[in-house]
Length: 357
Ligand SMILES: [Zn+2]
Image (tube, rainbow, N blue to C red; front, side, top):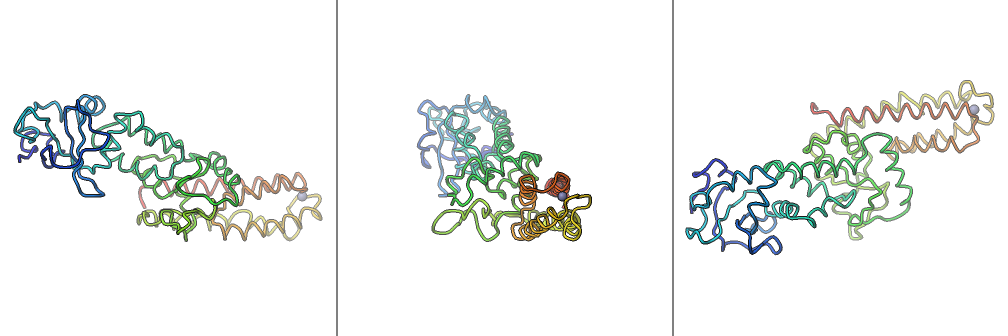
């Protein structure tokens, strides 16, 4: 056995060389007319998996593969079998599952199924592996597809957040199975936050971190118990085991800034005015004041319980709009609650996007 790295510059991609007859053929990525065999070790079984593919297909999309395959088919370059009538083999140090995902995409179209399901909560896990390989082999089309999938799945502004999160009402009281996660709902956030960072998908970081903050801390996404269901969208868990020290640091900061913002802004300060004399400037305080006081106390209590101030302040606005409050009080509630919501979103965004924590 010869080491490919001794023979060429790109040889470091091939950490060792194997004979064609070692390892297991991949059930679908083995083409009889393929002119190169790629072998890689399975992360699951630790066994070698063999892929018989075409240099032209791989080279067309990756300059790294093109460089690798531009070498003459000599045993020195590929280190494969001495008999040149056999097909050369390269061993790649990536795991076989990642390579299989990659080849499935290069040989499409069924490989693109990974990208077609909207808000698939498992996408970030597969996407992470794929992104590493795509980076290494300079497969820009795949990198772009990963970024574009995540960017479409996750809200990029408070307005988008409100639109998607409002779909939660459609599933209220429903038990949701993780494997059938509805495309209308925001999916698992910790794996998404990891992929957002690795893929430098900055515009979705605020949404992923706010969702981590409000996720139900007693439920582990991948181990929901014997029933395999979530309690509800509002009690959605997360992949807590994947959280990094950076996530913890950001989560603590987000908790702190949300607490402070709520303590300094409406409805808390605003409430104090509303409870006593009613909202300043209201001409029908005998009607508005008791209604606002009762509702605002509920909102304040719920905010601490749910850790979702954006939702509760939005509900406060909706309640106000549908109530018999005077126009002046409605406008005041809308203004105060909207300012607070925007402030929370912006502060969460700054922490989430920060690289220096
Ligand atoms: Zn009023």
